[in-house]
Image (tube, helix red, strand yellow):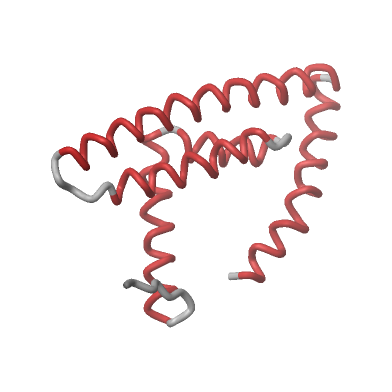
Length: 130
């Protein structure tokens, strides 16, 4: 797992720079700067809206006596999506939007859950309970 994160940290900036150069050649550098700013602003707004909605759902679940497990996982996805949208880059923006929009977040959540379950079954990931 650490290998993949390390590779992503090394490769992602190079890919983002390549996309910037390619897109800048087609639409111009000022449009690229404007798109980066607009996706950051829209992403922050969307993350706030989705975060508040998730907090509201978590409160409702707790009032009904349920543990807000799905809402917590949604909150983690929204936090990661918001961070990705605030970083400049079209690839990270795409992943960030996918994590913020509820319909596209659901399949990604299932993939992440399966990966975490696999890691727990293999003994790579341990949850300590009191």
